[in-house]
Amino acid sequence: QVQLAESGGGLVQAGGSLRLSCAASGLTFSPYSMGWFRQAPGKAREFVGDINWSTGFRSYANIVKGRFTISRDSTKNTVFLQMNSLNPEDAAVYYCAVRVTARSDYVHWGQGTQVTVSS
Image (cartoon, rainbow, N blue to C red; front, top):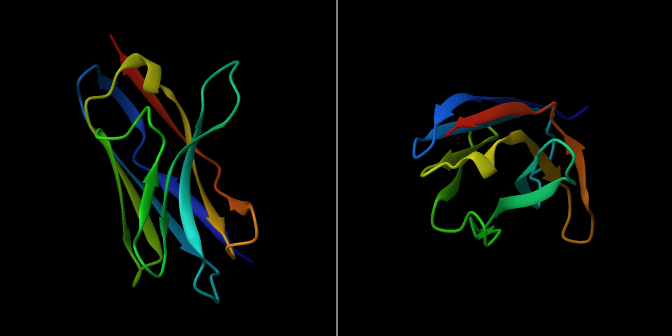
């Protein structure tokens, strides 16, 4: 059974940085991609970015492009989200997820890690 564990969330001042990690266990296959999503109170969950596990190709939501960077350590089945220039609008619970194939949706999700940004 695939399990994802996010870590690295916390409180940061506006303009600051945080690095989130997501370790996947129980992966008996190479996923198509691993992604980051976030959900702020009262808002729908939104896509932040993802990384293709085999090619390393990354895509980002426009709102974080240039500020956030996704990377991976495939030897440890871990994906990272480096977040710079954080602003209060970035505050949310951040989730990582696994997409098994190119045709599938994100089906495995972590429990999330809280990111709070003070102004």
